[in-house]
Amino acid sequence: MTTKDRLETRLIRAGHGAGRAAKTVGPAVQKGSTVLLPDAASLYPDDDTLTYGRQGLSAQFALQAAIGELERAKSVTLYPSGIASLTGPMLAVLKAGDEVLVVDTIYKPTRRFCDQVLKRFGVGVRYYDPNQSPEDLVGSASEATRLILMESPGSLSFEMQDVGRIAELARARNILTAADNTWAAGYLYRPLDHGVDISIQALTKYVAGHSDVFMGSAAVNDPKLARALDDGIHNLGWAVSGDEAYQVLRGLRTLPTRLARHGESALKIANWLAGRPEVVRVYHPALPGAPGHELWKRDFTGACGLFAFALKPAPAAAVDALLDALRLFGLGFSWGGFESLAIACDPQLKVRKFNPDYGGPLVRLHIGLEDPDDLIADLAHGLAAYAAHATQLGAG
Ligand SMILES: *Cc1c(COP(=O)(O)O)cnc(C)c1O
Image (cartoon, rainbow, N blue to C red; front, side, top):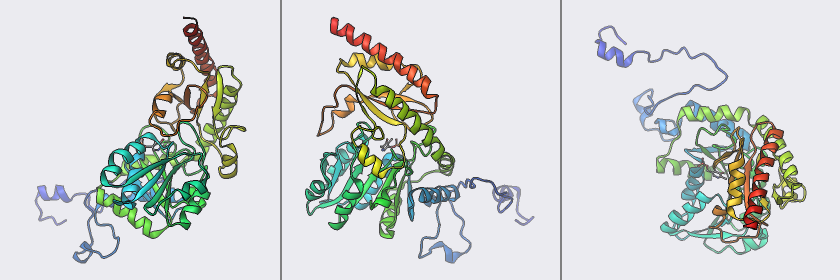
């Protein structure tokens, strides 16, 4: 700045290069659309040099590095929501005429994208039974099959899949694999270590951990795939803000500690529910004897706070009575935050192609960081309301 400039000009330039950033434990949160280049030659680089803020700035880079550490991945792409981290990679690798095999227990909005968008663009979508063997699944692939999209466990009914075996068989046939790994938060299970090409998670859930920000990530090791995903977000015009990247990174710092507590409390509550007369079955892969337990034991290092249980058959009104009697559990979608939540699952199961009998109405719980005994007392209250309502309805 020269002193000859007038005030209006000086106000525009003031503070440039003040250069007094102290070192803090978190990254700087840079805000910028424009990135200033050092000279004319740098305006049009022939490599990946940063020339525009949408590519991400300091906080986004710090978060990418931390998720790379978490997932043991060479490259991490950030998305503005968890659902975008599923739709983005699919749009990046699929083209008209391709087919994608999607597990029938997939997160419902992912299914809606497949049905409402992919099909419209000429991509075939086939839903498969999570209980199908990896050999039968990959054996059913056609010449057009380009991608297999898994989610294990499914986040409503908790079917487990042999993800590693599916990835191995798919690779031999040149089919890409992707896993929505939100349940394991990139920490309790690492898909890339098991041969999966794209490890996806809704950071919105456990990594952010406070139910107040949307973000998703896709982690890969193959440089060509990394390039395809990065080109994909640039082509779609998606970006995440520095503030939100910072917020997600702050959550990630305490992820292992929080998950240990979520997992321990959830297992305690699952065990208690399994002994209750109103409960037919508990769907929690870490519970011995529960469906998928052997696969969980083989592949996972722990469990999170999300599971479901089936009640003895009764009308939906009795399930509503249970939910309405809860004081500590909020009624709401999503999970992974510090608070406990409950939902009835059955209305969401209707869109599925394979509908096994879970034994009765399915209720999903997210176990938060409250005292588990308080949560058990709350559930006891809910189950009493359920039983009273079911008897009443039965008698009426
Ligand atoms: C919540 C969720 C998503 C989507 O995340 P958003 O940030 O809400 O878009 C994707 N997959 C699973 C399994 C989820 O639970």
